[in-house]
Length: 79
Length: 79
Image 1 (cartoon, chains in turn yellow, brown):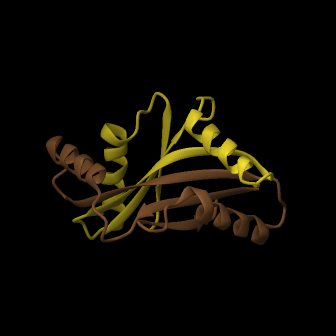
Image 2 (spheres, rainbow over the protein chains, first blue to last red):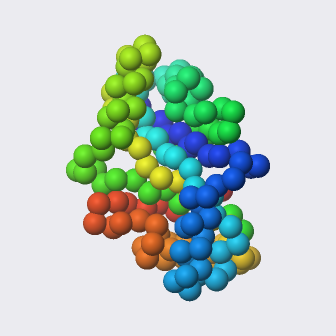
Image 3 (cartoon, rainbow over the protein chains, first blue to last red):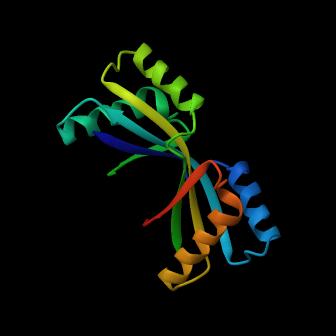
């Protein structure tokens, strides 16, 4: 079963990478962009048929390894 | 309006970063992970009320700057 997880920086944490992308987008003419924040995306293939259990496992992975919960949030999304 | 975009490596492109994460997950006991692929995630705040136009703009950004279409795919997702 495939589970996707998105890791984003918490709202109050500075995101220089996103800012650079924002400036680059402005530079090539996308003036309507107000802000942009970058995060990480993981597509996890889990050997588990029960969706709920698979999601729980993915959540545990986020907590233990994928996300730094001091500065990042995670979100499990459906594939 | 907030639009999210996910950039992933194409299926046949090697993903050493994802492989490293996979091994790390195995190392801390997550044996049920079959594979993991890493991608990028962008949260774009666009000054545009029409959802369709905002999504079109986000798609254009992906094509022109955010994704390298030779090796990457993009997907616009709803917030």
